Amino acid sequence: MDLAVVEQVARLDEWIAEGGVTVLSGAGLSTDSGIPDYRGPSGSARRGTPMTYQTFTGDPVARRRYWARSHLGWRTIGGAQPNDGHRAVARWQQSGLLSGLITQNVDGLHQAAGADDVVELHGNLARIVCLACGELTAREELAHRLDQANPGFAAVASAINPDGDAELDDAELTGFTVVDCRRCGGVLKPDVVYFGETVPADRVSRSFALVGAARTLLVLGSSLTVMSGRRFVLRAVKEGIRVAIVNRGVTRGEPYAEMVIDAPLGIVLPNLGRTPMKADF
Image 1 (cartoon, helix red, strand yellow):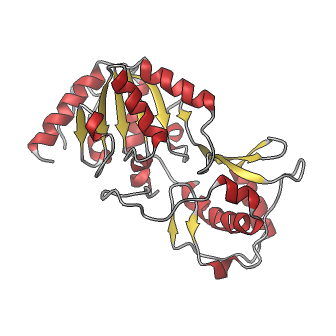
Image 2 (cartoon, one colour; image 1 turned 180 degrees about the vertical axis):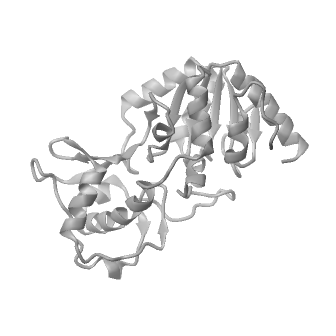
Image 3 (cartoon, helix red, strand yellow; image 1 turned 135 degrees about the vertical axis):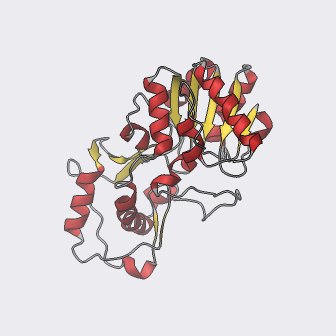
């Protein structure tokens, strides 16, 4: 990293050392764990719009296509391990430097790294919810049931997306069988917020409260393209709370932030929140 970035990292380390940091994390934090982000450094979308709630609930064919792709995608998401960035955030929390941890990610890697009390804005792919009776079950259980229902399914995904959906040729979907809720026969869905759904109000209000109580809002690995995350930056600015962003590439939060560090999160984050700070970057 060049000298200007090193100086920014040192300044951010001072902010974190003061405590009262609320972290807002996005897909860029999980790329070092093998889960791609939505946009990449250029800011352009890697693919089209993900599955919408309306399509999932209203089109059985689209739902079957989704479950076939998601079943493959889960093999990557479910097997992913936290990286140095996740471990750094967990360490800050355990050291009492964080006042809140909000994530837009659905991979559960913050918790796997040792963090707790995480506000999962968009839910978690490891949980399955029945849209009829509301029962929650583990994704591993559903994966086992889908394996049993589709013993000959040997498709290979060409790419995996951060929402757990995989890219797959439609020709490989023929005959894929979807399973329903064991309790009531209702439609099953990952316990995540699809496009067209609204983030539950309690998660939003809790997140606003965490932002409002912070000394620093630290955005990690998010382009802040959608309002779901950007609204917290706008709230922080409105309330006079300083905003720092660490992200690879462009971010729509730049006009509002006192500090923007464009550098690899896996290199920057492990060097923050230590006393004294390690100078190994």
